[in-house]
Image (cartoon, rainbow, N blue to C red):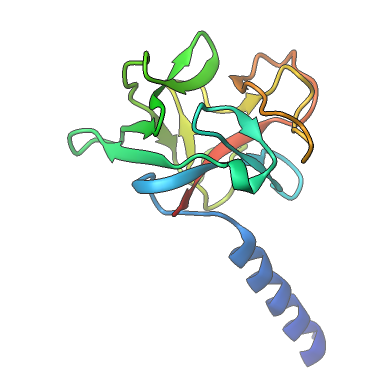
Length: 163
């Protein structure tokens, strides 16, 4: 049987991990799109800007407005620069976009993050940068795409953090 000290340390670590994870039950209201690594410790590797680009600097995170579509499991996303959509395989937000209906994978989705809903578009959800992501703190924002498995660097899921 583990010692009381060991059990307390494990409980504390579990609480810290839970508190640090940017999880929301639903994509709803105003929030950030966070990029969580799809493997290992599911590290938070940054966020998306108002334009829908991947960046590591939290001060540059966009504010997204998620609106549920007619009592379905679908959502539209908008930022200060306009509606968000997928162009080809690239995620983008801007005034010339028409709103897309995004969904979420179930919290128990295979290869997902246990207990975390992640954004999807149709059958796609896993994302990456074509420029060896994730971006470093000093990098400019990078375009982010649904993976084709030809990208180098880490693949990420888009998750929601309430603001």
